[in-house]
Length: 293
Image 1 (tube, rainbow, N blue to C red):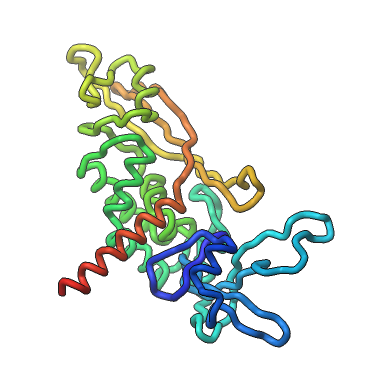
Image 2 (image 1 turned 120 degrees about the vertical axis):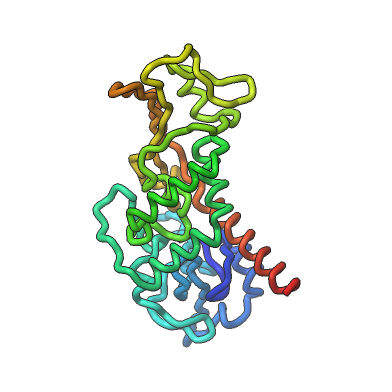
């Protein structure tokens, strides 16, 4: 794991580097603790709120026996840590940062409870950030009706019970479980995958105002432009540290029973960026609520 936060209950995460950890903690207790002859380093998991052990922060040996640099990373402590927080076994088992699962994988569904309820609460509290990142993934200005349809489908499928779903990947869980959706009323952003899709279409075109229009006169039955998301992949990053995640966007045009694939494109998930944006917006709302109460 390459992120951390300082305290349980706070809505914030920080990328784990030596400089960031030193700056955030001030190199003080309770994050620095003396255990016998060793100084141990601790933090909190941004996902499940359990204590973290920071590994290889300040080490004398910079390489292992194979002459490879020792990686800096965080791992769950699996016990309560004084001054840091209590350990919650159920939250740990469902933590996506412990062992990321693909939406299309075979991981067992989680049971209703604290973690699942937290995902539903986060989806409601961070709906504005979720909406923003759904738009970034699709390259569309989406309508309220489309966002409502995605939320309804997530609820219908009990998306919070999928072990792959977490508070860190809410936009992508929503898209993956959102089924096949129409694009009526959506506006295409610049450099959107829908630009490439529309270039292949027999029935639709990109209008000057960036809206989607018909390229032919009225037809019966009317064609429809639709999309869905599939093939969630978790890969090792190119630098060998951590992972990268992708989902494939499929854009189709339909007319009657005829379906034609216009585009099939893997798109990277901006999970760290989403987490940072969502956490900041939540902190600002809480700040305003406290000061203006």
